[in-house]
Length: 275
Image (cartoon, rainbow, N blue to C red):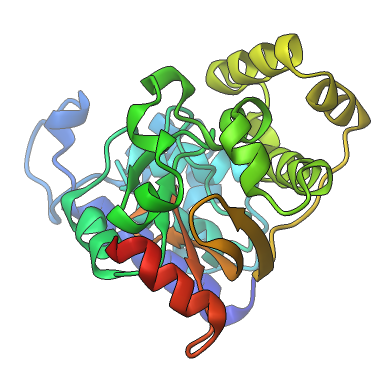
């Protein structure tokens, strides 16, 4: 940590500590207190660190707190996820991992964003690539999204099991392998989460191609690029593939397909979505 980060971290911890009600944390309160909130020694005790060490942290001393210690202090001070990520960044540590469960409900404002994308097919996936929302353009692009059983409404599942998607992808063998390697990279440390394990087990049972790809342990980072699709109604489409994370819902990822303005693909996409 540089000096400015240490100072900001100390100021933030001190301010947060003084905002808490000791009685709400089970801390006995007796006599008068000169300042509101918790005392330093109480934060140290509840966090399992020494009083001196915590004092140095608030004073901005040149120390190197571990992730475990910062997490403990964050719990004691009842920090929100945003506050927790903030102090981790100040301490020069990796951001807090997203929650294990993820969200299976799409916020209303996210659906409005999807709908505002007009002719561009777009959908939202969770941490395990379950599809939880889409716009009308995407339903025209892939009608099965609206009729699939909730348990099967998963991007990786449909890529490997849905014949419609197999025909839709320009080069299924290459494209499906790319999806698999990007999925593995994105789930990262949550590869053993029950939802991910269940999905992988199901796919290994039904797809030899998936089974071989998963056993390779290959990973690949997502990058925005042009992808070719062969749509049964309007024919060949060359679309840019983009993925964005919702800032207020980091477990939700917005995926959008766009066509270059004035291109044949833009004309065909407009015809598909207006039909």
